[in-house]
Length: 515
Image (tube, rainbow, N blue to C red; front, side, top):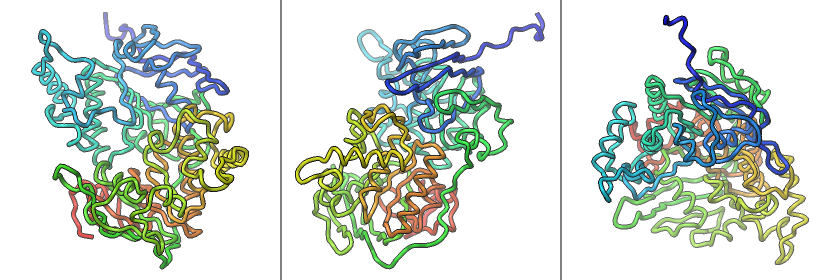
């Protein structure tokens, strides 16, 4: 038989007519996607477009109401993720699912432990992990504790976990959300290695420049259905792809005119927070002001003290040293609720753990953190009518796509959950706002809207502390930019004179400069 008569390779994944309904909403409608084997296939779409639901269906976390799934040409039906794993599908979630106090090896084999009699065969596991790391460019020391790893290495561990279980089809959900540019480059090198070895990657992302960098084919989903699937060569630039997604141009975070005043709204002096057990301090002598009308950006690889800094300012951690002033008031010893009532707004970095009650309605989530002030409160009681009405306003003003304010928060897409939180915090008339990853996991349209709200609030005199893994966002929105590394502020930079690559160098310690 000649090569001309060989049958074409079967698609790695073929989704035909996938439909999934929830009460009051159709998440997916007649979606059709064909993913060629040995390619990187990107799926893009605005928030609420149905991407997450579709991937949960492909990974066995949900069952479709209609349609069929074929893997390598064979029709399959999944009841659980274990069924998907059995046919070679693995998923790396946006939020890493690793136990910090376990080693790399223990995390990778958890639930799939090789046995030698009644005992764990660590030798076989270590050899297999080393082999996978060497062959796919994912080298990580199997015996290191995960808590000692940087974000890029943690992601390699997540990928090794699914490869260890035999995955030949990888679903990556927002894999670059917390990576600096150098780590993104390394990840893409890893993905190209996987593709060269015949593996298939389904890549979910809102970062369109990265999609164009890594994808062989791109599928656009809008309002729960497939709009188009095109080869990468058919898309000229990110603006064209943005227009395909949401019908508008790609937004930019640029802030042109300065609105910084002389009035210091938040003054942080000498914040120090011990790490316990005599280890390295979590925060060490952190000092900076935030003026009214100013956005101060904090750049850093995750795990270098950003979370602890936020928690210290919010009163969620007791300091070992230093002081915090809000305006003229020393708030160092104030409880969190008192700080909120004094005008500190808070967009948390993890909307599920810190920003929402997923089993509560949208209007009840509107009340969170604002329960002692109008419109949420009426004396000692919650004003349900006013809270519902104000939630309706937020839903309209911030384009939160939901059937009703009575809908549970868990029923919303991640981006719509984020828009609700931003709307809630901006509606509390804050004088100082902590915005931690305010546009993480939102589409280009929602991103542009959130940037506009932040810029407008800044122009009206709001002081903002911005923490973000999106370096373009940090550079574009900030008036002043600090870099945090191992709990210390190691550089103070002018956003108008720094590139993402150079900023990434400071974040990883490759470039040093005293503040």
